[in-house]
Image 1 (tube, rainbow, N blue to C red):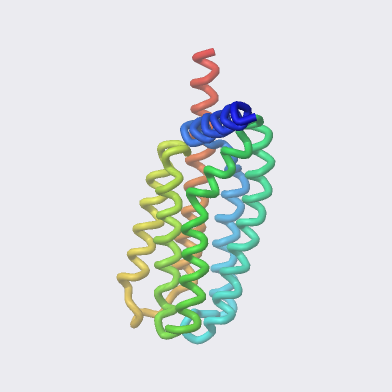
Image 2 (image 1 turned 120 degrees about the horizontal axis):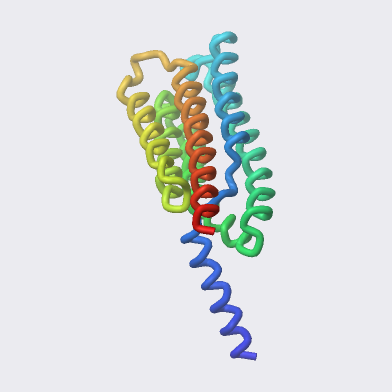
Length: 208
């Protein structure tokens, strides 16, 4: 029995190593593009209804947290389905690896939002920039098993996040701080994945 357990442990270790070294194709470009359009739509609604972070923080947070929850739900559903279809035997390990890379950024964003809203509401103006910076860290962490162009998407989120913070508290937060950064960013990552997956398929066919 000890030999069997050791063999199973080694198999799990090998699969985990393989999952961390193979390009992950679980993210769906169309769904990511749709969430980018959703971010632009939410920003337009926020602008139309004159909802801003300074005067209506509860409604602002409800809109964007709700948009994030919807986006993560649809991305998660498609990711599970695509990963099982494309990666088959390594599906579980590949999904675990993907979650390990991005989950710290998501959890940090949730905790940071809760802390600022409760203990430092006067600092809520920083949230759009901080959310973008945290998202960029998740993108950078995922670069090693996604197409190479993903790095530039991470750089986009880092730059837009820094720009939002550089504007400072005296400049009224605009709906487009979120709409442009996340809308364009998600469209960019959708394009990178679509092009990267296609190129990987062409290279595999050429080698075959």
